[in-house]
Image (tube, rainbow, N blue to C red):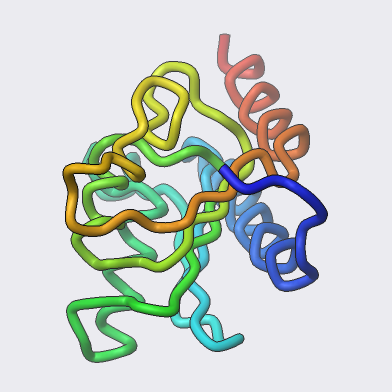
Length: 155
């Protein structure tokens, strides 16, 4: 995982994802937001829609990647960065790998399901044919606090 001073583009991308996560919380969805950017252009954005769709696979990352592929009219996303407020799970990591997303920048780590180093590191598994660059922990406190507040209000 790369550390250091985040770029203005990475901060802007994660701030946009955080805005979407807040919108998900208002809709009583788990507050996770994702944005796909390529060459400085937002290709797609999404937040969790698992409740709305009655679909446990409707994660923000998966929806954003699907929408970005449709917008780009392609089946791969080279030179694209996925910004997401929570470390991707196995399902989303698989989609990221299959779509050949170039970079993943996430906020909060996920000690229960995270596949970018927390539980397992699927995104950088050396046996796979694609391994995106991963930057984790950007705006981690803000992203994590949103999730903590969301769950504490429901318990």
